[in-house]
Amino acid sequence: MIVIDNVGPSPPARIKRQLVKRIRWGFLLGLMVLIYGSHAPLITLTKVDGKVPFNPSSCVVMIELAKLLISLMTLVLTGGTSNLCAFPRLAFVAPYAVPAILYALNNNLVVLMQAYMDPSSFQVLSNLKIASTALLYSLCLGKSFRPAQWLGLGLLMFAGVFHSYSNLDLEEPEKGEAEEVERLHITAWGLFLVLVYCCVSGLAAVYTEGILKSQQLPLSLQNLYLYIFGVVINGLSSFSSAASDKGFLEGYSWVVWVIIAGQAANGLLMSVVLKHGSGITRLFVISCSMLVNALLSWSTLGLQLTALFPVPVAMIGLAAYLYYR
Image 1 (cartoon, rainbow, N blue to C red):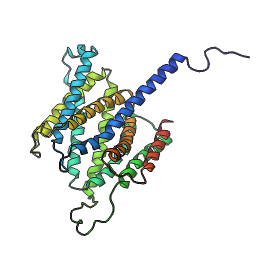
Image 2 (image 1 turned 45 degrees about the vertical axis):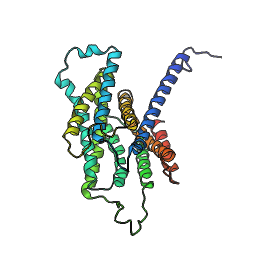
Image 3 (image 1 turned 30 degrees about the vertical axis):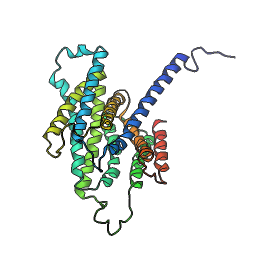
Image 4 (image 1 turned 60 degrees about the vertical axis):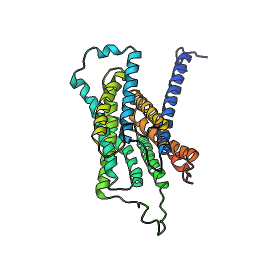
């Protein structure tokens, strides 16, 4: 028998480290999927007489503020305050304003598009952001995908489209309800706006990942820069808007505070994924959250799942297998 040293399975310590790392990533991604998926059901629970009782723009500001405060607290607890001793140069910090501007632009696009299409059409077509993100990820960050990975991303996009479409109510309304029911419709201008929305969404994700990975700074400090601009830009947008007659914190219940805490945590966890992982993983998290959203809506709100629900589940599973194998 020939025995060759140092060849064979990895040492137990290395295997243990890899296992712990996978468990941590699995827990992090699972938590993100749960938070993403619970967002819409939680908002539904806040409604009074079918309407959201709080100012949505103020909620966005509070989420950004919570992320800013948590980032600052993390920086202090990890001993990274030495990075704040010297005031950073504007040219160094300014790039962190771009994601906040892009996300603010998209928030306004969502509102603008409602005049040119119905919400259901937007829900279906917004899945195109998976394709735009993958293309921009390849072009801007130089990521090359294998044919199987492209196929997986295509399946992921069609899983979202199929899931959204299968939940549409396509039955003809009765004569008495015809005037009250909003029909599916989209104009050419609406189609153009949804394409812009998908491209801006992909660009924001790709740009954020690029800047987080290009600078060798503590993630908590990078988050601090990101969310300072997030608070300022969203705050200006909120206070300059005259569309809402609600006070800044009017209508806030414990469910709203749960939403703020969850979305703040999700934003911080997403920065970990973008810094140490991949923006493509973000797409799988969002797609999986659609299924969690459906299950939570079924279990807590009594909404019915369609018979086609297992189809997007299988498509997402196959997409993950093709991409990560």
